[in-house]
Image (tube, rainbow, N blue to C red; front, side, top):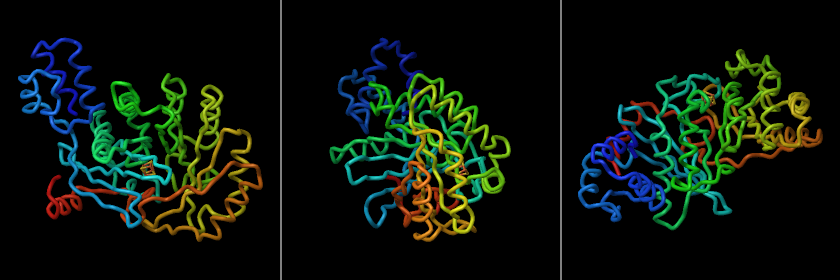
Length: 349
Ligand code: SF4
């Protein structure tokens, strides 16, 4: 919903203060898809909102369903023509997780990531972030289902757009917003320490995930340029402060890249880095081929996991979603050109 235009209309109209809360209940609670459905509002206001305030700041222009039917990727066009992607992942236990984008493109240039290679275009606004979740919430609501979890693991580095991401998370969490528990909202960073420090002091207790992907500075700097500015010792020190203060678990994401970071020696280095906190957990992620990197074979992924566990590290293989629709980790890479072609094939819905 375009909250800036909404505020203008409510002010111009001299609407009472409670009107905003009523509207938030209609939009986030009742998940209306048309202002005409907001029957608790005066008819004249409904008409004005229909004319002046879009219920979404993003437009779904294409979508793909995985063969297994457990994930849906949607391409959204923003009002200035930029494109982003979001993914719905349906878990066997009934949870519905939305992977949202926080930026159009990404400035962090991780070597294995399709988004990073596409370059940075701009930060998303609060409304553009919330509207990704709202879109799926409306869609799920048609089948009496709801969004249970949100992960900031789509396009972009969330802490590079910290204020908008946190404001969006507050709206997702608010009782008058989407009502998603804070412990079910996760922010994944490639390691921007100022963002971790700010999150440590936030009253809203969101989950923190760190995209680690390498067990030493030399390799990490090669595949994740952010490591030059925020090397591992400093990064882990900031994470330990976060854990001490919040007592919350931290997930370390580790993509297994064939012949790059998947040897048993590297598993031992990783265990050395992370052995000292029972609140650390390593998620090993199967890589989906993009660019020059290849996925580690299954036997090596299994050996890597066993070696971590033998060193006392809490670790699991992360379930992978949507490889066939390029919706999996590191594969989101919409650019305006390809999405416009798709839009010509499939008009708005
Ligand atoms: S992995 Fe994340 S932080 Fe790195 S380039 Fe891709 S989107 Fe950006």
